[in-house]
Image (cartoon, rainbow, N blue to C red; front, side):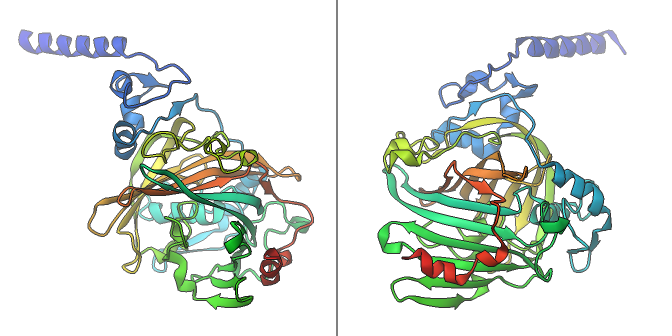
Length: 420
């Protein structure tokens, strides 16, 4: 090395040391906004620069759309010990067929916990991990949740209250007699969804059986106005949910059988800001006022940004390519590494233009049997092309694994009773 090269190397090291010395740690509890994002951009939070923690779309939302995430120190998410035990016990017997792209031999837990990015089927195996292994509890009992519709720039447009119940028939962690499967093993879950208010839609709802063989779900709808049950085509899995910005396939970001999407592409590994120890976003006691929705920034345009706490999380980034019949062109998924769950997604139309941002805030909830599940306190589907947003908001009285409830208790007849 000559003198010039030595001086250059010394200068580079000195500059790097100076940059490290001047980078400050962002205080816990800091709210990032358009006013201070440049101030903190090169500073660190838990060893990561703010710029590196923000996806391109999150940075854009902060700078242009009024998003103000509050930073909190990260901590471990509580998960069910039975979920870990089942993964360890049964994952070794799960097989994957590259030709059919189907996972077989699943019993409980996560089917492919040790899959590595070097595996050519890594992306779709992670989708199977979510499909079977998401830590949600055996029975989700949401007596009350709200759909809040927001018109960008004008604020709260309308709201609806619903009831949702879903009983999983596979992968049970606390099944009777230690059984992990209910029924004949052909179905994944049964779900009951019906409206509570406003009065003109009260009782409107669906009963859905999600099959586990790749066929479309069986769906029955009840229309109170005519007091009739109608069986719907299962092909509506990618159709809009009436009156909202969500498609049926948008629920919890991913609501589809893995092979329905022809292609998944692993993009990489990174850190992002996500809300996994979220505050409750809805206070039903405050009626329909703006104060009833502390999880939405209804007081500042565009009136639909999330208001919650966010922390550094390590994620897998996967691009999902929908079938040609699907309205979307591409979905970029951000999946927790610690457990199979999607924190957020970016939706692009068929021309490649950014369309929607989906952000879910979550927290662990416990059941009376000791079960622990991860529930969504809120779910934002933000349509930036139409400047309109639908927010799912869960009542803090959420229940999982409610004792005494069986899959047979979820039925079409319950829909008829709900309208009374």
